[in-house]
Amino acid sequence: MLAKRIIPCLDVKNGRTVKGVQFKNLVDLGDPTELAAHYAKIGADELVFLDISATDERRATMFPWVKKVAAMLNIPFTVGGGISSVEDVLALLEAGADKISINTSAVLNPLLIDEIAKRCGSQCVVVAIDTFYDEAKKKSIIYTNGGKKETAIETLQWVKEITSRGAGEILLTSINHDGTKNGFAIELTAEVSSLAGIPVIASGGAGNEQHFKDVFTAGKADAALAAGIFHRNELSIPDLKKYLLTEGISIRP
Image (cartoon, rainbow, N blue to C red; front, side, top):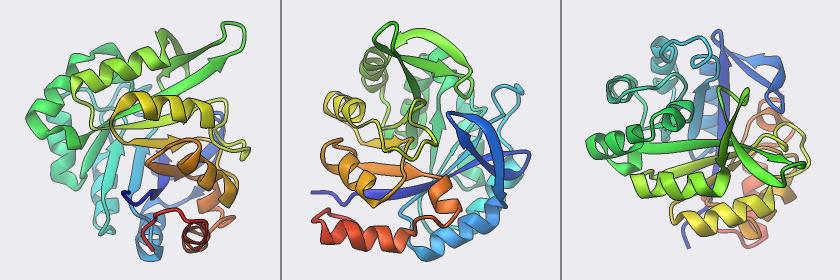
């Protein structure tokens, strides 16, 4: 069994790391370069950097910040936000990213997944899925623009399409669970993991050690991502890894 991965996420806006609940009411949680250095030092397996306002502001990712964060790291580094072309991807890889994450641009132009995979390799392409379970419709629906715009696309339908186009990994965020600390969307994560055939990173809802165990076992996730509980030191990565190892989860120490 491949070792499961623990991934902190830096949601960055105006050069600061922020975090909210269900993508709203953002709170400043620190300097992204300082946090990046801290996570690399204490044993994070990877780091994700999301420029969360780039798409809405119709601009490219903040390359200077990407370079600053990359300089602090010796672990795989994924960057997302404002990526709309293969040229953007190449520039980010040159700036120090190992992988890129696309969401809104992939929904608007699914061919972009094919183009990046062909030019840079599928291992470089992380498709981020922001999904919301609509109780009235009894469906999980894809949202774009940082969770602001509803689409007509059902989540599992989208999973099938992106995998067929060459996505190498999925970053699955449940908007319903995001920032709640009530646990990951286990059932949805398991469905996506079973369907995708590529690694799935679970995101949204982490609040304690048990939540990580649950998403790795019942949720079948390959990696688990969290932000606020790590940034606020409510749960340390070394302690989390020790717990998971004692629970029989294959994890990098």
